[in-house]
Each structure stands twice: as structure tokens, then as C-alpha cells.
Length: 254
Image (cartoon, rainbow, N blue to C red; front, side, top):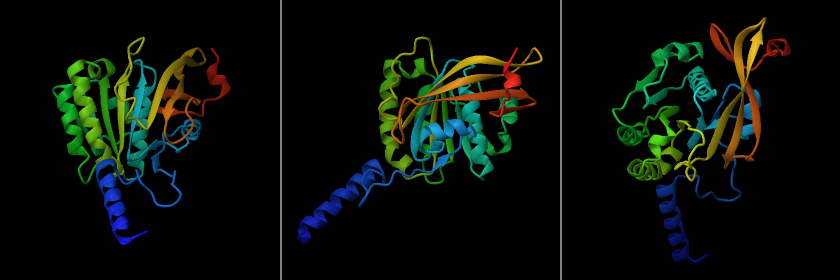
């Protein structure tokens, strides 16, 4: 390739990296390896293809309240902290339960909980947290209905599109935790999320007639890192601490 053309190509590649992130263009055979944070549920990690919630990507986790979605996110935070990582939780809905988080294994003294006054203020904060020194896990906890309001949806699209490059250059797993109505409207994040999970509570788990937890199904609605359409069952049990999996058949009988 002549020198001038090569320089033009390198300039184009640099511009693409700066705008869209370092993963957008790769030399030679593209690598599919992505660093991930375990969900702590082995069956789910295997179904995701990446071994967990991917770093440097946006993940959308949705479900109706009590479907297990909040527990899943808290388990991811605990896993990141267990590896020496940090986490920030934007609590838009004021639903963060510190006691429950601690029982899920979250180290509260190492968790930053932020309560923006409005969802729009929270969206503006995302870019600040993705500056150099970003956390390992950044959670945006909101109801999907808030994000689909016309003005907010436009702001969300603008904010998330501007986060693509700094997120790709970081080791942060950005998670939008969305409470869904029934039936849920289309998500404005559908185009931007590398991974979209939907949780559905399936049944309660009993031991000696007492409720000891519940079983939920996680559907991989979309994935850029592995096959979509996969499903995994996770068991969430209560016994002082909130544990996952490892439920015997005896615990599943009434």
C-alpha cells in the first residue's frame, strides 16, 4: 500500500477508535474475548457466553419487581468487590435496601450509593462516573416507564451514545436495572445494550412447609457476545444470607 494511502487509513482507524472505542476496529482476526464479572450463578454465566456481565459494555437487566433482577445485580456487585473492585449505585427510584444488599454479600462500606433528584440528573451523572478511574460496576436503577417519556428518552439516547467510547475504554460494567410494567414497552436501550436479560419468577422454594426462596428464569433476550435466546434457571434462597444455586430437590418440594 502506498505511503499516502496507508497514512490516510491509519488516520481513519484512529478517528474510529476515538469516536466508538478501541474494540470497533481490530487488526487481523477479531477477538471475541471480553473480560466479565461473574453473576455467581454458574448456569447463567455459561448461558451468557462471556462468563458473566461484560466489562466495557452496557447491560440491560429487566423484570417486574421481585423477579430476582435486583438480587442478580447485587450479586454481581459482591463478586466485583470480592476481586477488589468498586461499585456505584444510582438509586433513581429510592428502592435500594442496604440490609438486603449486605445479606447478598455486598460490602456496604465499599459501595457508593447516589440518589439523584431526577432521572435526567442521573443520566447526566453517568459520564462523570465513566471518567478515568471509573468503578468496576456502575448501576442505573430506574423504572422503564421513566426512560420512555419523550423528553427523557431523547436525553437517554444522547447520553448513552456519548458513553460508548469512554465505556469501551474502561473496565466498567454499566448495568441499567429496569423495573418493567406488564406488558413492557419497547426499551430505548435496545440498540445500545450489548447484553439484555429478562427475569421471570417461576416458583417459590419450600423447606418443611416454609418459604426458603424462589426460582427464577433468566432469558438472554439479546447478546453481542454469544447466542441469544438462551435461558438459565437461578435459585435464590433466604437463610440469613441471600444465597444462589445449590438448592437440593428436597428444598423445592412443598
